[in-house]
Image (tube, rainbow, N blue to C red; front, side):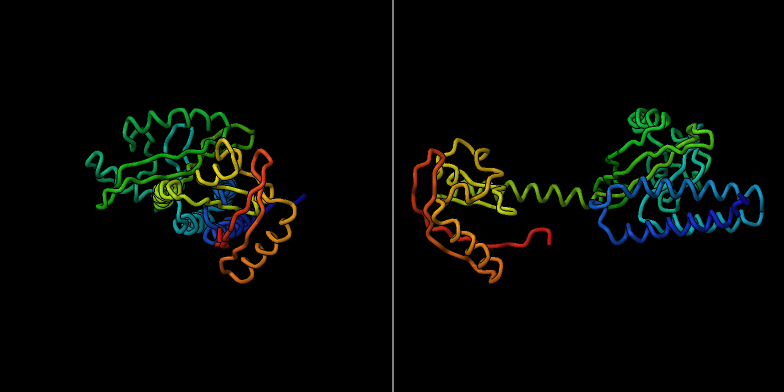
Length: 299
């Protein structure tokens, strides 16, 4: 087999990494949790290819480095490569800018670059102690998922929450030669989740006070029911209803009517009302007037 041109290897890796970057922008991070792992592998291959090319062709050094820099500096995440001596070997502009800003706030220290600095030199002592276990794990060849909160480095005072991975970098002989740090800012997502939880608590508090039965279904399965609904069918708690089909509590004579009203709600989008014969947990029958409305959920 002939020798592989390092430039060719580098170009292929760069194109692949670029494709992954495009997918990152197109797919929400919450739906693409494997992105850091794939990107780490591609970056590792790209950097390795660049090193090979660097040894064989000095001119490729400048070209390869500029290509890698152009790619990583425009990704909306923090990327760094750490050596076995815990010194930063590579860092993208977004990550470096943030570290320099934090060094100014934490230690009143002005830096032009953090490349070559050891992690314990650019991190607060308590923060470095917290990640010591993560570093130990990744240096043993494990991929480590992380989520952490940092004080704000901006004027708004809001804490910054980041999520990502420490991914080991393996050498030709299979040993760990360092690791990649890949993280993304999930502060807005976290605040949205907290807001949603707060809204849900308020919603639950209101619905529990309603004298009318309220049931929420997803794909015909009960995912929420208030206290009135639990009492209506003679259940002990909502756990007796969650996950069950609404038809389980409808008399067989009215199953087709329920199905017709489901189709009507979906097709016409209005409240479909009907009187059903229902069944309690103990098998006794009763009649109710039911109104249902379809609402969009995740598309």
